[in-house]
Image 1 (tube, helix red, strand yellow):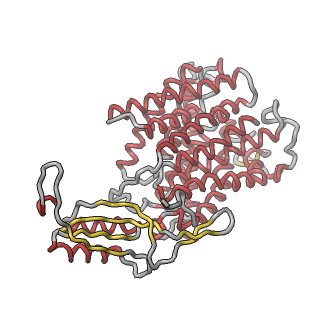
Image 2 (cartoon, chains in turn cyan, yellow; image 1 turned 90 degrees about the vertical axis):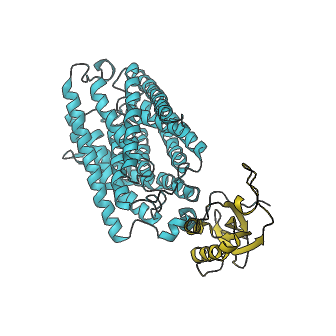
Image 3 (tube, helix red, strand yellow; image 1 turned 180 degrees about the vertical axis):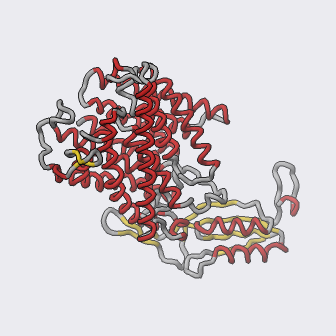
Length: 398
Length: 112
């Protein structure tokens, strides 16, 4: 439950991380998209999401609705999941994962999406994309779980799903006005980004450590690998940034998140020292994916695809490479088990492909019905005033 | 030499800048200002209910131009900053006695 609370703090942390990176006229709208999900997905998860994700299996694809409205989910531990904690604790821990996964892809749609369309999209995306994928990988009887693909804390379920969906939505939504004309999209508050990254790092101890589902050796392993990978990625990103020009604060904050993403699937399967190559690799992969994205002039505004999609894929594959049976019961490539890497590849491909395709279709439906974007005038004025009737930094000098 | 002080809608800055660029007027000073004219304030929301902001955010552009460019510059600003609604702003024109480029010490028209 403490871990659930830690993960909960990641959501406002993410809001600050994203909120600082947009222009001043859109900061509230960006914060709002993460924060409202604490309400929206929080309710839906309890109502039917948990049952779809973790309820009794239906063909390996989805959970049945037996646990709708938390029927049968009580104070006693579940016989299937997390036998050492109350079933309700496991359920609410998982709720936070569902919320943050939806919040992650908001980084792709900032500064131009219509708030009403966002809410509709969030609900159907959560139902049609997140819940099935959570079931495949973590649900009892899920087909990727049966295949033996490893995902300790959600590298596949959370990060690849969010990252690939972000790319699909950015392509559907189109670039922000002025993006192609070279207008500066200057982040309006980098201290906010750094604070957000700090809160994410803090919360990630719950995200990964809590995924051991019991305190003890495995949780400690996950805790340590988490911070080691983040540290390695932070230093690596600083170095890349320095070689290019100067060591950037925004870059270092991004590097930390890239490392945290990559260690997520591996945290309970690799030895702490192996978190170093995973973190270094994460920074390199994400850094160059970001350059590629900019070069292709795709306005995936806050690089959810580069950091979470590609960082998540690297992490999932790295789990198949560096896993050690002594830590989490499975060997990877280095331990002589090449099959594990193949299984990881299958999971990455299936989840990434499904997330991209399904999100594209859902986004297209919303686009053709109620429309995804605000009017051009509203976009120029900024979403804070236009969509929310508020401004972030009010007041005039006396 | 004349100084133009133009108070415009913040969202029009990009268009105005581009139009002045086309005239070869590149140097400008831009300030975020708050003020009021005939446009009544805008209404924003508080936790519950609303409040009115009396001083509205505007952008002030200051440029100094040669006398012969004045008409074109004013026209360019009007053309790009106008919506026809209240709150489009104002343009003030002031005489300029002298200008000095600090780096070189150049004075007068060659300094702008």
